[in-house]
Image 1: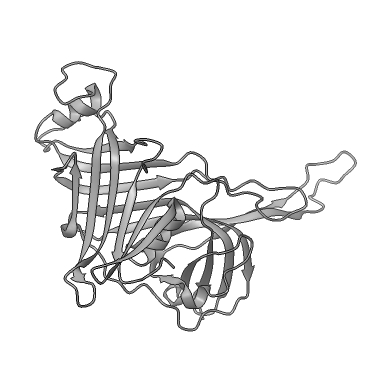
Image 2: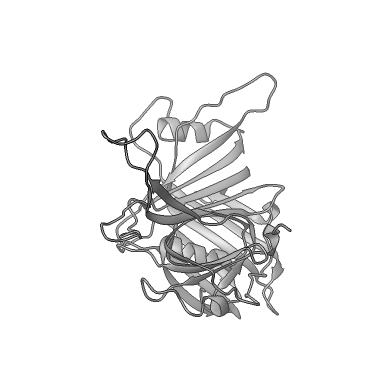
Length: 334
């Protein structure tokens, strides 16, 4: 008999000590309901080059050092996304407000990001792995007007053990999902008639820093952080094009300055939290966001639409490039 993928489980837990698997991952971590994905080994079979005096066949081989990486694809829920955002950005502040739990997550300038411990059960008993010193390298969120808010987390883990005992009853994130009808986008406090949106955070962490005398990665330091977003827009005027290509909405020829204005993406559920009237929600605020130049690209009798992309920019040393506010029912981020 084969093994059904759907019987597997993936649990994430913020790791307290580098190099040590978090012991309460199975009981205090958050179980992600995944659409697909697992971590795969990035390891090579080391085969020597042909030698003078040797035969025509490969005579020997050894296994080299390795790491583990992959993408988790999921419908975005407000429990799991808080853990992923914290691991991806690095700083959080928890507060209880009006009988809800609010988590303000901002990018860190520290040399290291929070590590995660991960329990990953593959199928109904095929294998169970434990990973420690895992980092969220990339995080992607997207939604169409008539679809679900979906996400993809790119994970890199330094260490893995196989043959672990899976947690019998993990605490899966059972918070409601979000659909496009409950998502709004504003730019400079003006609503954008976006048909879809996507947002990407990239920490640009290398997964090949291997050291002599060790099988494992020696470092998982984030490099330059990049935050970008894009929107599918049906054009109703040339104002956005002029701002993106010329620098301002009123310009009639190219200039060197770039207009930078606040971008806010608000996502909420239909369901409310407990006995409150407040929905689960995620609000992403970028104080300075600049459009990238684009072309209208007309074709036949098509209505002119564009995927308009843009770049988040750091406003000042003391101001975060982006702030994520997660409102849910969990007092702490797992």
